[in-house]
Length: 263
Image (cartoon, rainbow, N blue to C red; front, side, top):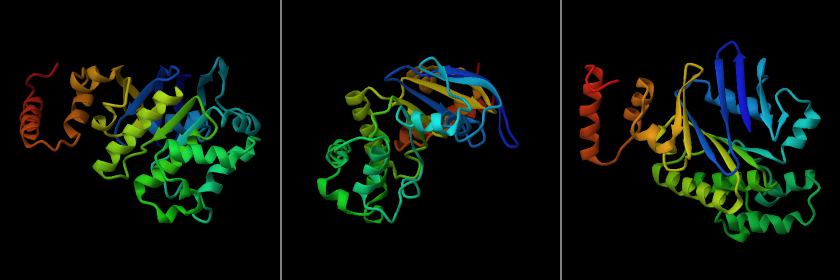
């Protein structure tokens, strides 16, 4: 998948952002609210219009395609949203929620596939008879991930999928994302405001600042030795539990604010 272009809107302007996402890769888009990262994800999903530039998938332009073409693309490009509860129909049992996209795609024996999906995301088989309200936040996100995987997509756009979860649950869900990627070869475009969250799951990280890519590179390099001042600020803002590391960070933050050690 390739994203290249510039989108203008009343609240967000993206300037010449360009990147590629390879099969089986995790590329994280990181930035504060208003940086443009969610707009890019929505544009790829067809939820936001693209006024300039192109989005290509397997050599074909998919920006601003018809509704019919977008429905076809749903087989290959799926999404996991930030709030799992609002993305799941509360009036439907989990099995029906997961069968729905399979039935729409003409997949036979969808209920058998649902059992496999529940197992893949670590939920008991009887989960299919229960409703979203009966699950914890982390379990609901597992259901949302199962739904995204139902059609065996090539790409999943993950829009802040762990930001509504506590730290322990975040780690569990991120581990699940990695396990599923290893098993299926799916590519993730992982959107987050927290550089610390995406470090372990990412192959590469692109930092968005005011609608532009401030820097992009291998995850370890961007998260531990950032080149851009904005990335350094994101690094300083990531929460750390270790008191010693917290003191080290405060000292580094003071040095940066005083203009020491910054390049």
